[in-house]
Amino acid sequence: MRSELHLAVIFWIASLALPMLLNAQTTPKTSSSPSTSPKTAASPATSPAKQSTRPVPFHGMISAVDQNAKTFTITGKKESRVFKVTDKTSISKSGNAATMKDITENEEASGSYWKNADGTLEAKTVKLGPMGAGAKKGKSPPAASPITSAEPKP
Image (cartoon, rainbow, N blue to C red; front, side, top):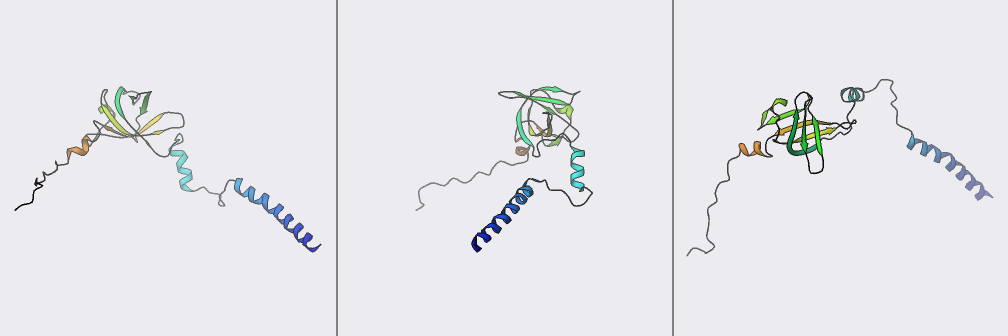
């Protein structure tokens, strides 16, 4: 009888605790203070259409440029991608700062972009010219190493 009572009490406590645990997992966490944090308040205001948080790399030949709409197109193997240039976009050509006017058709470009919630691709960085052209410019050629023969000296 006594063990049945203990078992009934344990079952009753477990039946009360289980719904509370499940509710704690599904309820969104709310702030105890009535004011929102500066980070939370600033994020939606600065970029309401942002979908991805990390930029995605791109590379290819520029097939079209629209200076009025501030866009350029890179044609890929399967599809073309249209990138929007904004005030936040960093453009460089041969390691020097450049502008939207420096972007021309049939020029190699690489960089990174964000995909916005509305499906547009916003360029974050654009590097004009062949990949690695700016990096090779400042490097000196490797020094020649002396050639030694495989035969030991007498």
